[in-house]
Each structure stands twice: as structure tokens, then as C-alpha cells.
Image 1: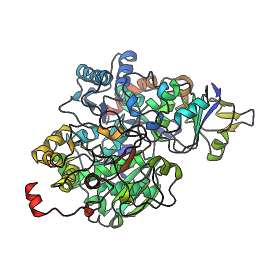
Image 2: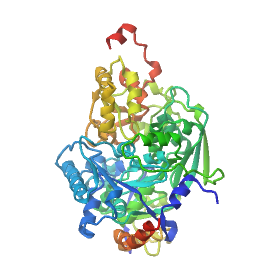
Image 3: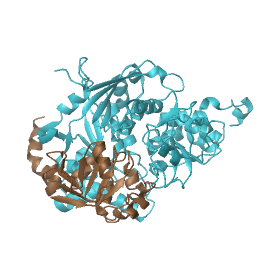
Image 4: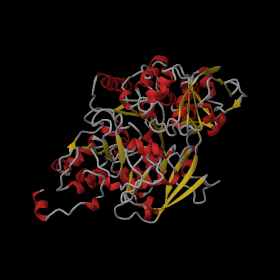
Length: 447
Length: 174
């Protein structure tokens, strides 16, 4: 029977079928960070003599809060640090830290056909490599560390074909938000999204990661993209490139529970106006007239209001969605020779990304523009450490979630691509890069 | 196993785990202390909890527990004394976390769930997979037949631990 990409990866990792449509699924890679790992590691230490299935299959790092912001987060970091050391687990400490969904690909820990899990919902990012990778809770992660497997319900597969060609100005973030708007904010629940089509094949690996990163925002178990020459070239340049094959591909006549086709040529730059990532409008559009009153009340917006009329208090470029080097390069092109008018934070996705950006002089462009250039962490995305919003503050952000309170109690978040965040930071309102006045040649020289 | 009590009616869809427990409280290495911050991220969370003291069953709308994978959401609900959550649908990770922590995830049709928002007393028979509100007729629901055992008797990690020999054999033959 012809099989999807997901089917092939899943079938190759099922150890045992379990009652009720569940299966025992082997995990090739378990990613562990300081926020969600400690309670699981401690449970294994106390109840199972600190015994792991295979420490070589685990990669750990300081990810969300780097460096620690207080004694409690220091204890989280120290717990993971000590555990990794005594277990012989690869560990990326501060200085070598980063967001796990940035570090794992850039170091080559993931490859086509693999399975991976982490106590972090955005683990779906790794599906960009043709892997089956998913977010799970702390106890499930502990189970995988103890026994090498997850217990999972077999998801259905939705084929998301993106035809045509992305037009100038449309980014992978816009595509990710368009997919969510198309299938619905919870339309992916119970499914793996298998992305195919001419637009997908033309995306770089970093763009594919941005797209897969937001599969969870449609409720999907994960997103997946079949590996190709682009995948192979990316992995060949990583320090730990796994041995892999490009043979794991969907059969041409594979059947899918659902198929959705999106005209990639029609994807336009979008910005969220509401309180979930499905609530977006084109940047040159308006807040919908049928927008839910509850979302509008929280966001303090009116139906029919032009998106570009929305004034902002802060801008953030970062997160596991959009903090890789290509994101920073794109944002820097917008900032170059210009000045921000609202507080702006630029946070690279890993220290490797940070150092590469500095080799290219991007940090000078950000800082010349008046933005704060930070070390790597999750930063303001989840309102956990730095850049937290006050009630009523409005931030345009390259991150992935705009739920009430996500970036701070009462804070309002508008999701957008890094170039839109940069343009908005300059004009102090939601803005497209196309709106920016050209820089006079003399100013450009001085900049 | 019987779970019973009064309900906390959460009249919102898409309550994500940041609203159940904001990230600023994810700074512990154990599962304690989460209950006091339950629903702090939900705009009407504090009011709702104050209006329904002693509630033990959350009734919510579609897609409860979406967003972040944080198991702290289940720990916060349990820490505040909640034993079950009723909704027309759950996000996958939240539902898995509920099962492993014996927080009963009850899926009911939107109409039935909505009707329970105003119930005074709900009794859930977990083993029988039925629910009664205010002495009315029993309503059936379905639990995952495998994970139900973790709700009734815990033992999620022990279950996986017992599978290790089979997993090692599978891996050796891979």
C-alpha cells in the first residue's frame, strides 16, 4: 500500500502496537532543556536509580532563560547541568546556548527519517528535515529518557500542497500564518501536516523550519517536509551531520486523510490582530468586520481598522520561529541607515547565530538603528525573563504566539515576519517595509 | 473511581496553557506550588475562581489546553483541587499530560458540555465512563482505553519501564 512520508517514518519506529490505536514509538533523539526536563530527570533518579535508556540519544542545553534570571531558574539550569554531566549527555551551557529548535538543526543532531521529541511544543520545527518530531509533556519526556519510547496515538496525515511561487515581500512566516488561517487555528488537531508543492521545494532550510515551527499553532501534532538536495546541503555543513539517506519520500500515490491546496503565489504579508495565530489580516488590510468581540476587546481594536494604523509600544525580533541568520539578515536590510522609534529587542536564536551575525556586522546595524542586541534566549516571546510587556503594552513580534498574556500580563502581541517587525519598529506602528521612505544617498553613506 | 463536585465554567474556546499557568511560574524543578497561579493568565481567571470556590471540575469550550506543552498546566489544575476537565475537544499534548497525571479529560459534544456550565453538581464514574449532572440521566463518554489505566492507577513510567526489554530487542533487530 502506498504510504505518506509520515507513514514511512512512523512505521519504521513502531516497536509495538498498543490498545486503543496507541503505539510504542521509538525516539532517535530526545532534546532536553532547563524548563521542562528537571522534574522528569528527578523522577527517574528517585524511582529508577537514575537509569536512562541511552544517554547518547539525549542532547541538553540552556535554552529559555540564559543566563539564569534568579535563584529558581539557576536551580533549573544547575539541575540539568549536573544531570547531563553525571550521565555523559551532550550539554550546551550558557555561552554555547540557544533555543533548542535552533541548536539541534545547526549542530546537525537531526536528520531525515529520524524521530525526535522534547518537552517543548515547537519541536515540530525539526519536521523541516523529514523527521517526525513532536512536543510532549515532562512525564512523557521522562518516559522517553527512561525507555526510549513515547506512547502515541497514530495521527492522521493532511497533505498541504503549496503551489506556485512566493511573490516578493511574502516570507515563510506569512506562509506559516496563511496555512493556519486556511486550515483553521485548531484545524490541524489530530493530524501531521505534510507540506509539499513547488513553493515548499523552493524554500531554504531556515524557511522550512519557520513553516514547520508553526504547525503546532494549527493544533497539528507536527509538520513534515521530505528531505531533498536542500536538506542534504544544509546538513553537510553542520558539525555533527548524521549519516542519512534521502530515500524516505512519500509514495506518489499515497492516500491522505485530507488534502489542502494553497496558492503560494497569492500569499501576502500578514499580521495578526487577534488572540490566536489564526487571527491575521494582510498588512494592507483591515481588522475584519466579523472579528470576535472578545479578541477585539483584549487587543483594544475596532473592526475595519487599518492594520497599518495600529501604533505599537515595542518590537521584538527573535524566537524559535524567526531568529536564525537569514531572519536577522532580512531584518538588518530594513534597519540599515534608519532609526527605531519604539523600544526594540533583537535576540538571536543561538550563540552560533549571534556570532555569525556579528561576523557579518549585523549587530552594528541593529545597534546603530537604536535596537537592543542581546545574547540568545527565548527572550520576550513567552514573557518569562526579559522584555516582558506591561498591561496594555502592544508589541509587534516575529515570534509564534499572541495568546492573552503570552508576553506579559495584559500585553498585546501582533505576529509578523522579521522584516515587518523592523519596519514597524521604525515607524512606530504596524508597517510594511515598502512604506519606508528611501534613504537619501548621503544618509546612507553616513550610516 | 468517582470524581464529583461543582464546576468552574470557563466560557471560552482556545484556552491555551499560558492562560492556565503563565510562563513566569515555570521556574521550579518540581510540580509543587502551581495551583496558586492557576488561570492567572486568563483575563477573567481570578474572578471566575473567586465566584466558584471549591469547584473540582472545569467545564470549557473547544480546544482547551492548546499552545505550550507545559505539563505545569495539569499540575496547576490538580494543585488547585481540580480532578477533571470537560470540553468538546482538547489539544493533544494537554490531553496526554492530563492522562499521565490522572486529571480526567472528558470529551463531550459542544451542546452537552455547554449545558454542564450551569450544573451544580457533577458526578463522573471514570471506570464506567459515564457522567451525571444534578441527578439527571447518565451521559456516556469515551476515554483512551490504554491511558485510562494511568488515570485509575497511575504508573505511566512503570508501564514504560516494563517495556524496556522488548524495546531493547526491537532496537537490536533494527
